[in-house]
Each structure stands twice: as structure tokens, then as C-alpha cells.
Image (cartoon, rainbow, N blue to C red; front, side, top):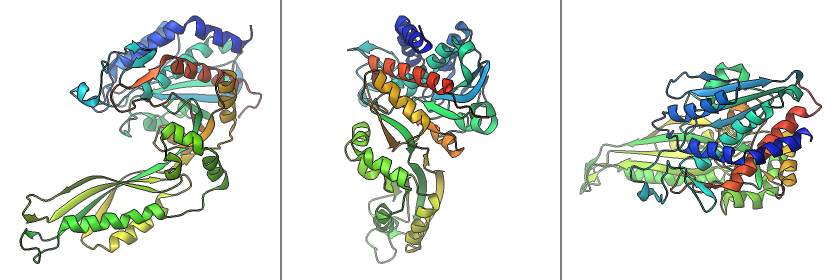
Length: 421
């Protein structure tokens, strides 16, 4: 039996263990905020210890440890990094109000689906990374290169204690390529993602009695006019690199299937969302202050400065307004026809599924950190069923498919003849 057949055989033989690991992972609450992942980290480390696998904890924040481990084969070769996060979205104090009909921390299996907070985002994908690490370790003496596992605890809030910390302080986690199992879809592979620019605008006026509108301009009305003017940034047009635009055009169908109808239309465009607005003290008072937040998404190929120039020009037309930049994640992308892309696509087809299409994600993941370092990073995970809402779940067979795909793709990447010095 060759190595690839052996890996698939092990997956089938240990299918119940692989499912049980995922189930118990969901049962270990790790909501962020507040960000205590201690139980989930312990679940991972118990498994790695039982399998005799190398790992260490990197914990700049003790309640949010990161699990890092590396297997080095006797034959030189490339270095593949497996990345997934441990923390998940919080759950409403009244789960029923959020739409839960299953215990969000129960890991229940019903109708061949595993339910629970974080099942999709992203304990299925992180479990796939852990099992990829474990199964390939059994072939260590026949592998080439290095395989590094990174399970991070601070992804959901763009926090500083997870992948960002590792990329800045732990050279071991960089590698030559990154494979991630964030929720995506069985029919697409993500090679890039839009960026985000978060701004807070504040409008200040004198304020007045509500009957004395002649005495002061209204901060809320000025803010409303400013918001209308900001909508113009959604009409901006940019010259994107040909390969990126071509990949997005060719992926229209897959993009809409994976992220909802209309996603392909907003993907190559700047978008604006006004997330919060706060103004006024009382109905019969002219507001003296209005504050609102803007979430601007940047398509691949567009920089912060490209958009900020227009924002500054628009804001200058409203002298009562000032704004601050709260957060910026530039867009990230790698080669949509890169080697790992082809490896994943070939394995998905071999496993009996349609060939997945290269797509750009609307949302953000930790893979951006590798791409910013010029390291290709690809995402292949389960469909985001119920992500961030009630009854989040993953079909068991979809989870097993992601495990098989990651195991085979990691093996193929490491065993390819090309080596990187």
C-alpha cells in the first residue's frame, strides 16, 4: 500500500476517533470575548501527548495559549504550515433568542450534522489541521521537509496574542506555504480576501432646544449628509491586476454559492457599512454631538491610501466633522494558480467532488498574515452553515472530506520534487 492509500485507510479506520475529537473540541467552550481558551487548549494538548507528538505552548496571554508543533523529516524539502484558530464567537446568554435548538456547547450529532458554537468557525478546520499533523507524523521517516502545526487562540477579535504574535516572534511558523481550514465551501478554495478599514466619525455643533433649530445646526443631520456623501466611495473604480480580476470573474458562480447571491458583485468593489450611530439626549433637543462608525471593505489590489484620499476629501466638505482610523487590514492575496491551489483542486476531484474554484473571501482570516509576508496561503474548509448564529453546524461527511483533503494535500505538497533552500 502506498503512502496516500495508507493515509486514507487510517482515516477510515479511525473515523469514529476523528469525529469524537471534533465533538469534544466543540464541547470545550472557548468564546472570544472573553477569550479564555484554556479548556479547548487542554483538549488539543491531551491528544498530542497521547499521540506522542511534539508541541509547545506559546502563551503571551496565559488564558489564550497557542499550540505550536513541528515535525522535521530526515529528507530536506519545503516547509508547510497548518493554521487554525481555537477561539470562537460568544453565545447569547439566552441561546434560544439567538435561534439555538441544540445546546451550543453540546457537540450534539443530529441528522448527520454536528451542532455547536464554533463547529463551522472553525473547530472543524482546526481539527483537520491537527489530524493532518498526527497522521503525517506516522510517515515522518519517509516525508520530506517540515510540517508545522499552529492552533491559535486569538483570532475572532483581531487580537494581538494569536497568529499575529507568532508571526512577529516565532520564525518557526512562517514556512513556505500555509494551509487553513476556515469555513469556505467544498466547491471553492480561497486565495485572498478583502481588506477592511474601520473609521469613527464625530460631528460637533453648539446644540439647542428642539424648537430653536435656527440657533444651531444639528449634529445628527450633518452626520446623515456626510454618510450620504461617503456612499460615493462605493462607485470608485480601480485598475486591478489582470490575474486577480480574471480569477474573480471566472469564480462568479462559485462566489455566489459560497457567500450568497450578489457576493460576486461586491467582491471587486469598495463597500461601506455604517455600523453604529449615536446622537442626542432627548427628542426635543438639537443634538450637539453625533458619532458613527464606518466599516469600509477594500478589494484585492486596492490600498488604504487609494480610498482614504477620497474619504478625506468628502470629510473636508463637512467642517464640523472629524474622524479617526480605528483599524486597518490591507487586502491580501497570493497566486490563484499557485502550486498548493492545484494540489487541493486535484485532491478534491480525486475524492469525488467537483473541482473547486479559486475565490477571494469577503471576510478576514489569519491567512492574511502569511500573505502579507509573501507566503502563499490557501483556505479550504466546510460551508459556513449558521456561522455566528444559532444552530451553527457542520455535516459530518463535510468535515471528513476536509480532513481527507488536508491530509492528502499536505502530503503531496511536502513530497513534491521541488525544494526551497
